[in-house]
Image 1 (cartoon, rainbow, N blue to C red):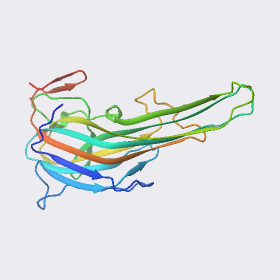
Image 2: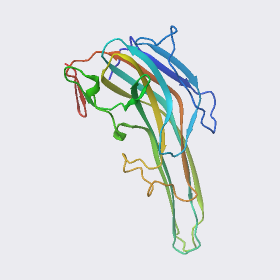
Image 3: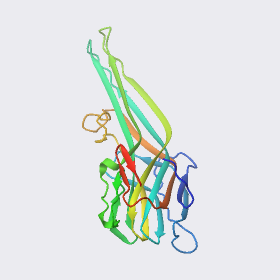
Image 4: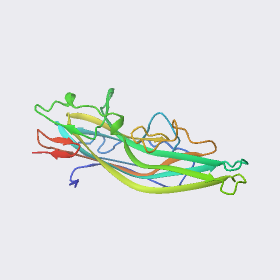
Length: 255
């Protein structure tokens, strides 16, 4: 999808140094002494380290105002790293097989809410539809299925005794970094002040990806995994799509 970025909201953070702890970044839109209309910029600098958790961590935030009901084009780009250490513990048993495995996935999603009303917070869905009279309260909220995998890995090592003298212990380490992005469209955002937040979460068991599973979700004994988020941007562009816009899997219409 090509975005014409004439009016935009940009949230940016940049990496200064790779650190071993999470440094919270509180990002708020600024400009003109008040809430910007259709335009806001904020910046920060940190690397965030994610261990497996049941909840997400906020990594970016934008507060902006729309003077009338509008549709929002939103894009997140970020650097994503996963570190895995896998240990296949040896055995003295003849003909034995040792297995070690570690997995991880960094999931990212957006939420939108009315300023000052946390109860209005919703996950922004990947698919959305619009129909007259464009009532913002009728837009469906997203679910866990709308959380996007920005990077993932399943790192598995198997050591088999072929000499009938037992197996040695083997340890492997992998570190990778990629930069990826994803676009969302929020239809019929009402007029007023909106808060959009970007969240990230690290999982060893991704229920949306059956291939990225380690047993019940725990790395094997002696193995570990963790994720990092580095440089990142959030871009929000208010626009006006057709009244009957339809953004669904496999098809998209705006006229």
